[in-house]
Length: 493
Ligand code: UN1
Image (cartoon, rainbow, N blue to C red; front, side, top):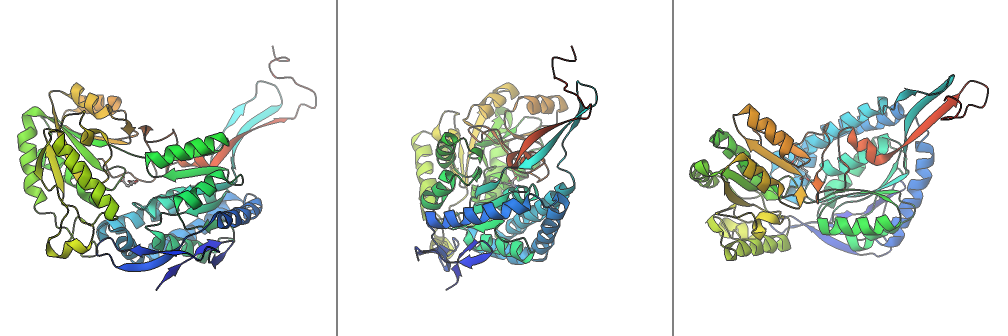
């Protein structure tokens, strides 16, 4: 049986716990590997190694640091298919999406390598004569990364690459469900020749390894993507230590369809948004807010198309909906479907665990659509993280915006309309961090900031130039070349 170990200070190593847990293929329950479960001591060793490595790394010129990132980018590109196959096997998303996700990591690697020659600061005029003022970005130190299973390599790339190019060292805890692709990613860093101690992989549970990272005084910041429950607990613990946190959490994303929309275009966006990755994206479409005059027509098209969506093992190229991550997720989704029914929503299609054609050996849930959903029902407010879509009808754009915004999350919204004025109104009024016009709620590109408002985040962004803000501090530097004491605010007035 393949064993996945930790990577600390440039060595693949076991933990003193000696404990391993199985990694399962969610499409068929097959055991793919075993992954080590680490302890606080392993986290501490990783942090000590990272701290030492960072001391010299910060002095390596950023363009030279970026050379390692270019190597990582080329290796990711070379291994795209291999990585996608592993990703699909352990996470379940269909292979086309697996390839897309690896591409996202490739894009991020090239983009952040480019940041080696940017990381711009400002030069600004001083208020005093013969004095120079400028700002530079400086690394924070050791970045603790806690990443989810739903985008196991893309999100790890969003966090590790900007951390490294700006001069930090990394301690990374991947999700327990997806350690195989994490191992492959670290091997790529290793092959790229990244100096030892700069990337450390510590596998294990959130309660043991995650908490040890958050509490460790040697970790200067935590970047986390995952549930609100865990994110807010991290924030509480880290806040008490005045440690920076960048949190990316839940979504309750909606696509609004106005009466002037191209309905077929909207249907394509809705199906991909709601059932792609089996609804397990932070950006998944879980609500459709439709103008009442086109509700019936849109619903009929959605239901007709859902029958064409083949469920199965994501490695089969003809499959469009893969399994959900594990048994407990399957049960939670089923629980939400029951809640929807009890609350009076009308189930149009799906609504149960798929068991036919051998699907019962994996974690498959039928793509599910509810209609006659009202904004206050639990299925319209809470994140389900599965293939369940709720249709809510409204009478106007204003009402649609209100329904869209009236949830505790703020990640992504989309609107389909052919009216440019209403599109611009929506761009202004939809209160999420991502807004799409005539496209679905998923499809973020790595060179733009990714993140959300309200309960989705805490004001930080992954990816884009904004990611640099997570991993750096600003230093303001003043150089006085007047040869005399010049007192700001005093001598010049
Ligand atoms: C996530 O769901 O956590 O826009 C990330 C998208 C992808 C990234 C999703 N590019 O859906």
